[in-house]
Image (cartoon, rainbow, N blue to C red; front, side, top):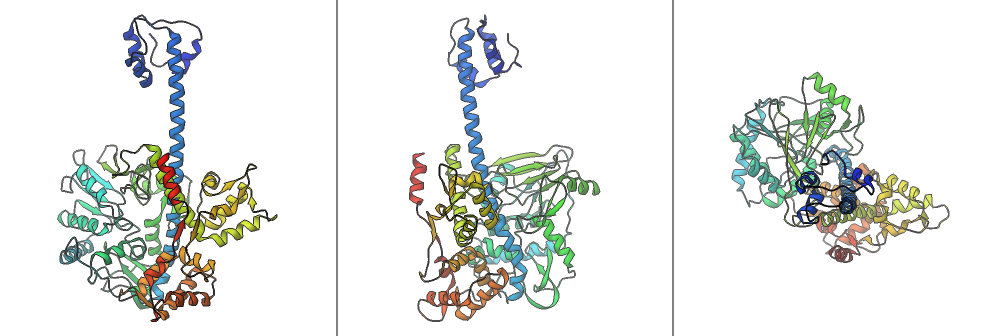
Length: 588
């Protein structure tokens, strides 16, 4: 009988030596460790009381070929999936850079909206206000740091970002049980934005918190912030669902150099020249404000030390040495944090001392990532539970899911490219000294990274973005052939169109601040003021006369005002081969 520790490949070295299994039971016992061979046996691939090793070797060779091919095929699909997620994440972090830098500047320079209008739909506004006021009272009485105890018989559940995905929260409660004295929870912030049900998630968490204030703990994330909500969807959701004066008042100007800002979770932070209604007993210094940013925006990395978080534009990267130093200083064993989307819903790093948990499945695209939560108790190893809320992808094979994610990521990347078309062409032409219209792979990759700054594997992505000749040179203009920005006015220069498209989210934020009555209309005077504010912050070098001409042409009925939402909708990217791509996906 062959021992189980013998590898399949070692059998192939027997050559022409013939070995016969005298008892099929021995062969069946040996093959039980190898699923493919066991399957062949069960399918009666080998008949009779004995079997020649030559036939076995042929089957083993076939099994190895199939196994190696499948492993390589699956690895290639996983690599494509990883590249797609990298594109999503790089673009997300690049957008956040401008958001962090703009927040204080935009608030200081404007009056801010006086109220948010709500319209009752799912939960009546009266109950929403009651929940918000009561939650605010309780939170104000609680310390910044909460201590909770666990035991082998009482585990605590830790959830990461939810981002408005109500189905994920429902699934967690279905699988893990509702919050209670015997089933405590910690929610690691980022409850809102991006998803469509941020308000419902807040109401469920706040009501649970009011019922079990000592057994449900709500931490703040970087999206529990007024300016982030203005950009990433929560403010828009409130305006859509409710039409009433919001208790989540935004900052308004004040005299003086220091002020404080109150977010909806009761955390107080400071910004220059802003304040909120109400009196507070404590104000943060500039150093304390920077510490808050570090706590909310920092990420772990494998490199030792602490250095700026260049991807996000705020916070820092901290290495395993920093983690060990902090944990030892405060006599802690492990850090469980969120804030980063992970393909499997969680990730363990820094020698098991840092765990990242992310609970919003399908964060970037349907099928892009799993969600997860953790159960922990004193003296036990953390247990991870993964899930994925899905309707369309549950029956689709891996290659179809990867194709869908990859197509969406490449589409987003091409839109990023077309929004910087003028800058990219200028960078390409500087490298193209012979004016041939072609660049080497290295020159093209350098130019792409230099202009877009996304830190992506451009060489690997080149086949999706541009065409390459037989000598390996890239036709750099081919990257713009199947996509363009629709011009609302043909006479307007492309540079202005690209700028408006690239910064449309930032312009929307400024508009929401200026549009105090939420009419959706902006006067020509306000329109020009918004543009000047935008230019001063982003250092955009475009003549004001071009923007004035665009504004006048967008005033279709010549009444001196512009429907700003319609104005932004006029700038959109056209993908010429959308239908072709869909057909190819179906065929594949």
